[in-house]
Length: 256
Image 1 (cartoon, rainbow, N blue to C red):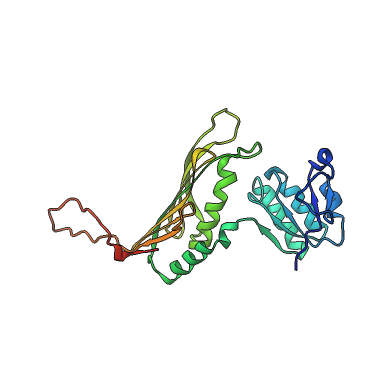
Image 2: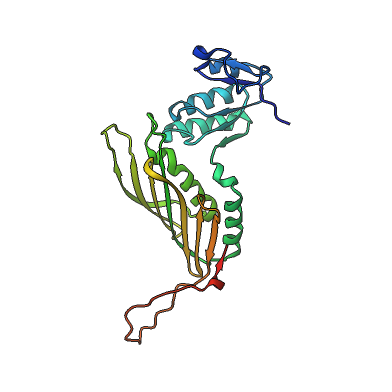
């Protein structure tokens, strides 16, 4: 029941009507304010530089539009709280573009975790690496780790972040991080580590989850995107002289 009615893009100032991917019936605006003033538009999707998200989203809500805004939703907590206040007064639907929450494999992972397939999850290690684009108004962690943090919240409801520590690399001393690795401890007992970079030769999108009954790997770059390794953490006896334990899982313990 949705029809594309209009697109606002600054590039229309130079390209004019020469946009072959848009049907002729779709209106083109170089100024988003013109689009927002159209009373027949019900909902807007904001896919613009992150530094413009708060201003555009607030304007859209104040014009009575439902809003889907790309991640990161805002640049800081002040903007996020301003947006929250406007949403509360608007009586409109507001969504952040965390599309991995709608991923079929993530849905299945959530179902299995809720069933207790891994019992208590102890740690999560997430990697998100790719070769650009490099943003001019935000660093790679703010741009990318939004996905991983939203997944942690969705899958585990881990509670408040009690502690966070990390290191970043800024190649050009631009104030933007190009590589960041962070470890976090949550009130619910979960420990998570997230490593992101937009200056990496290969695209990696992987999350490893470890619990009492085994492990799971979600790897969005593989054909087999989700695997469970149902080998529990071994019980080590204190009355043995054996100081090391080599582990090996069988094919029967792997669910793909």
